[in-house]
Length: 482
Image (tube, rainbow, N blue to C red):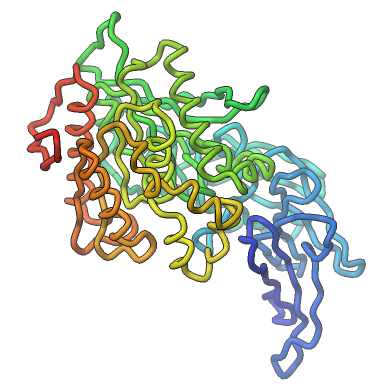
């Protein structure tokens, strides 16, 4: 709502779309009685123009700004010209100024209010796997990038020349920083971490593997996909020049999400112990524009699988990892990609599924309202739900698999994990099922997270061979291993 309480802006969308597929921005005029007496569609109302407007924001002067991906296919910042009901791009760049809002209330830009000037906007934008802080000055028709230590920015709130920014980097955990800009709003006078999720992290920096942003060819001629590659790193040990490290590949969840390349202690657990790790932004991930995001529509279980396999094969060809010791893991939708990859391809030697999807049809039938059409859109049709469900092709599994599942999960129900486990056990493959009381879709308890990491380590080490586990870990029971 604007400051005078006269106008209200909102985003709406209709099934079968998610809001990042196609949405509409509306403005309603509020009467003295508090009713909306007039409504105007600002963006998304044209049937010939596909766009997904988001993040409407009123300035103190009553101007309406928002972000949409019309024309360029990238989420850029626009302004509503009210008297003409037209929209104007504030600044165009082949970069993403926002992201899909799985959680509402995040802010990727804010308005810096200065009485003597027209509107100045502080914004974050994502390009080539990295987030940047930008400042747009409407009066000067200028845009500048402001240097700060964060490589991923998730929230911005402005108060004059002071910005409060939530972000992270490859050596900084999720943190809240106070950023003071100079009078020209183009340089940082002071950058100070006000809060950190891991305040004593500095002493461990020598152990951190820094991610390398890589572009690799997919199975489609001339097409590339993206990933963050983490080489093994431990200052107390040197790897053999003759031996390539084993690789653990992670397929992120969502699947309309992205890997960020920021400090993740779970990843560092692997790299500090001799493993290489790669976090793949397969086709369908966000951060690279609409065309990249839409690669997965109708092709979930095809594009993601192919890109994960292509990434692993690329790293082998580049001489970075051992092609005979490749493993794959993933949570939720990433768990689905893990299971599907192991069912339909033979690239990896072992896999771990964390609350992963084995049965797409069951998931679609029991999905909550927000995502009720999402699964069909990703798969393409009802037939594809069955044809790409790993549970229907357990005869094709040929390597060890460990499955982790929360018993209070209402998104991917525990029965899916049990079906996968029982089917693989019946087939005679090495398999383990770990179930957690009190855990739902995503493990929250420290002991669950720790146990999951350690059991994956032991499981993969036993599966690929030629790897000694550094820690003293008692392995869980594995059928047909023990």
